[in-house]
Length: 337
Image 1 (tube, rainbow, N blue to C red):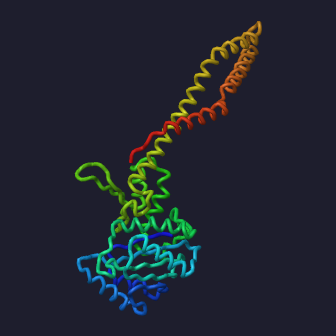
Image 2: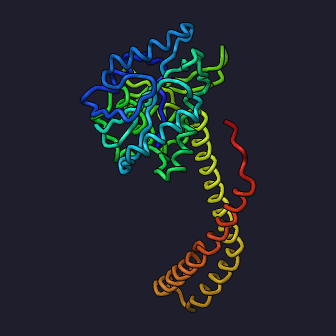
Image 3: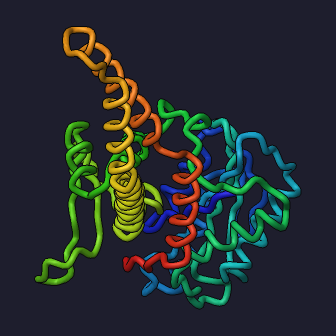
């Protein structure tokens, strides 16, 4: 289950949206508002919000989305929604829970008044983050399928709004190109070819990078909004690990090559002596073409034996690489974000 909070919504627009017939709405439960007409429902919300006119954002609107294979019954959905509101501190106030089934995945719209029945405001500090954490706990409590990552196979891009569709395009582009990059510059060049521009946010008037965003057409998305893995810190961490691993592999290959070269140098004098002995034994008493042919054949055999003896030993190389991996795990440096 996923929780997503929409900030800055007005009661009338929020209620009208969730009650549109093309959304296939089903009002599961309401508290303190009329459910038979969305206009009256909106008016009830607005009337109570006017008890505290200084509260600018009195409309709370969030969506609880379930996995496409999950179809909980209405009683379970109501219980989850009530625990969700109570867990984020929205109590003693008006609310409406509406189910939508027009998409492949079932989802609930939760609308509540941030001015309670006593005319006091309800605190909304970090309410979006609280909703996400609570959704994770409710997912475990009701044994629902957790949303570990985006599943593009279950995403219908045609059904998304233009903004959401462009966000998914950015997500797909980064996901496909990031494994082939070792630096941010390489990633920037690859995305630029796809019409996506990388933009950095700097700390004050300094050159210290503080955030990253991606622009496609007229839309711009923060990296963390596209996916948590695509924030500036996580991207630098991912690329830094790849660069470190590449350097370690290159260093290991150099050491293997050097050890084999040293082994070859130690064996070279002995092979030269053997070659001289074979050449002297194979040389006949009288010169001529036969002598030259026999000597050349002897030299070729010696070179073949030399090359065969200096072939890389796979067992030794594997043992060396295993030892290098153990060393890297033990002395792995901490990469600062």
